[in-house]
Image 1 (spheres, one colour):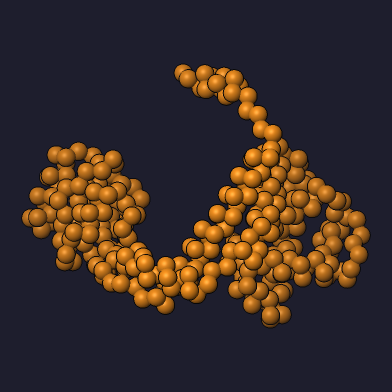
Image 2 (spheres, one colour; image 1 turned 90 degrees about the vertical axis):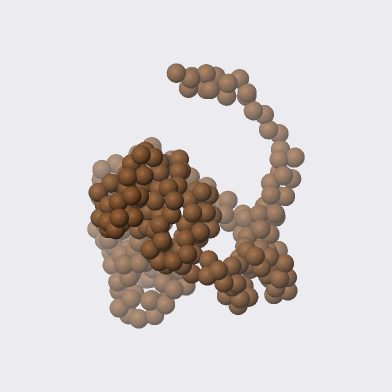
Length: 290
């Protein structure tokens, strides 16, 4: 249930804030009372509605009595925190209200998008297969597991490269000299990377390595000078259609939805009366110049 709490706590909290602003929490509710927290009632109907908002995988945990009890305790915890927030006046905080308004706006716009795309964004098996046949090069599995040392100057990189070639330990040198903090204490471990994930020159050097333990030449990027070591290599291997069909279907569906929404928005723009006060924009730009 910890996963459910992490996934839904914020959304439920925001929805609770919306409810808090809309009504008095101590007002009696219609429906069968399931729990009462300092006068606030959670009805059985409200509890079931909250469960319906969960993902399908989370709903599976609601089958057992233990799962439902734990979820109710989460709702109670949220209500207690919400009541404390109200005591501190946080429900009237302008920044919080602005975030709530933005969240509400997003929900409404998303609902419109779902309505517009309903029944229009389906992707047939034939479309998926045709895309795979025409774009096989997109579906090649090739990954390398690498470590790197990032140095500030070329001179430092040359010195470290000499020490590595003399047999000094890559991980030890990384922890001592690398300036890239996210990987420094992990011995420069970047894990497995795919093409397109990193700087082009860094990518070319990494994928050019052949055997475990191979070192790259010094690679310059915007961050400094890198030395890369290969830990493992996967592929290249052509992914089969069953391996990628759902990915293709989702991507094609996304493109259809974008096309529908773009056309709809363009139509709205053509019908709308829109005036931009350019002078105000220019004034803002002038104020930002030091």
